[in-house]
Amino acid sequence: MTTTLALIIFAVLVFCVAIGVPLLSYFIGRKPMTPEKSVPYECGMDPIEQEQGLVSVKFYKIALIFVIFDVETIFIYLWAVSAEQTGVFGLIEIIVFIAILFIPLLYAWHKGDLQWE
Amino acid sequence: MNEMQLIDINIVSVGPEIILLAAGILFLFFKLFPAKLSRYLSVPAMIILFCLFIFLPFFRDNNVAGFAGAIKWDNTSLLFYILLLFAALLAIMFSHGKLKDNERAGEFYFLLYVAQAGMILMVTARDLLIVFLSMEILSVSLYVLVGMFRAGKAQMEAMVKYFLLGSFSSAVFLMGLALIYGASGATHFDSLYPATISSLHMLALFYIGVVMVLAGLGFKIAAVPFHMWAPDAYEGADESVAAFLAAAPKIAAFAVIYRLGMIMNLYTVETLTAVIVVMSAGSMVLGNLAALKQTMLIRMLAYSGIAQVGYMLIGILVLPQSGAAALLFYLFVYVFMNMGAFGIAVFLSREKGGNVAIDDLAGLAKGRPLVAFAMAVFMISLAGIPPTGGFFAKFYIFKSGIEAGYLGVVIIAVIATVVSLYYYFRVIMAMYMQEKEEGARWGSAGFDFLPAVLFLCAFALLACGLIAPHLLSSLMPGEAH
Image 1 (cartoon, rainbow over the protein chains, first blue to last red):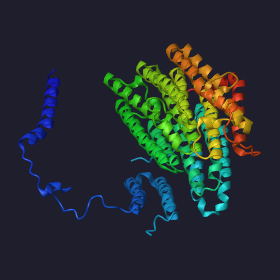
Image 2 (cartoon, chains in turn green, purple):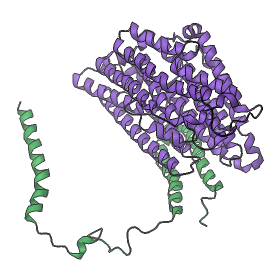
Image 3 (cartoon, chains in turn red, purple):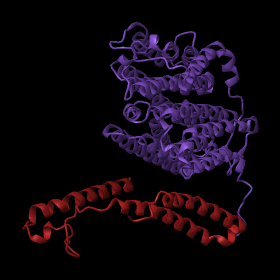
Image 4 (cartoon, each protein chain N blue to C red):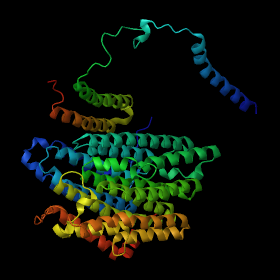
């Protein structure tokens, strides 16, 4: 019973804090509109251009190709940690894995996605 | 530390998948070869699928297992495997005309093969994690296939809608998987009996997990209330892709629902029975009512497919009794009648160019009598009228439903069937009794590949009707789990 009561008190407190603090600042705080408030990040560097700037679609392809290497890194790292335990079998497995991951890279290459122009 | 156990991995158990992926990669790089060859690409694609039938004698009565029991072939998975091969073969035949001079033909076959590999993995999986993995393999390639031949905004919309809803359903499935794991500490089907869960709190968690898993699978079979993507995706995709989409993923997802029922014996629990009943009745009512007012052929077939799923779910309800064989028989007939009807849509849209309305079918019986006959057989079979396989499929499903005491659902199903007669017969009416307005549009063009295939489908349906009792008894799953 006491644990249930404690849980209820805790839940009520959490609710009060979660709702209360923003409400408090809403009612008590003053809201002057300074130029700093209208920039996307209040701290850090000032933005040098509009945030809706155009990004070349080529970056998207590069990012997709990067995913191949990303996945490769994750799994090779795991294999490297347990390389001694898995032995020759693990080595063969990781070679098969790298070969499979090499195919999409070949395909992207074949399609000419590695060329910038 | 001891050496890893390597004996558990059995390459043979994923043999079909490896062949499909290797062949698919060859297709992917096909553009290296002269462009002229690409019009004959469908022939090797079909031959490779035919070759996969040679796995049947290896796996039959053998219970080949691999990956520590996460993949297991029994005779039921073999049946699902055959159905999937049939569906893929039909899809390749339908797409032949579209891909004749398309430079992306190789990519199309690659994606189709990857989807096929995912589905074969799905019907043999005995572990929920493997099911999820294979479902993603299947889904990702289908997302691309739906938008592959996109020509306009409607196609783009179909693809985005299918992608968003599909990935959402995967997330729901994964959440359910997490809950099941949290409740039982296992993901393998064999260790997931509700009875193994000791604490009552955990049991509730387990059931919520199963319902979420069912919801994720419900998206794949397009059962109400997870059906919204189906009509738009089918309409936006190329017709041959739509035919594949309307049959193959449903078979694979039904295989998983079937496993959950047979191995875990889930659908004897009242909560889960109620879920299936709601999905089934909802699909039948909503699918049939929505199909009534469709004017486009593909949309009508999409809603009719939703209704058909409703009938099949009755079979899921009564799995332990005679439902299993009835469900398998229904799926067997469904592949031919539904893909056949989509094949007619493929054929007509090639002739006409663009989406086909039901009124466009007017005068088909005069121009192309054989095609019209095949379409009439598909429609009669979908409606469930005696000489065809569709009648026996419905009959066995309803019979097993009544025997198991689900009278209410069966009554809804029978009323829904009567309602469905209207829109199925409207197609036949248009073909045989309406005259077309302008000049001869369906000129007979001698022998054509596609109508011949469709005619074979119609013949198979009629044959199914004749040998139905024999077929049903041979479909009875007799193996022990």
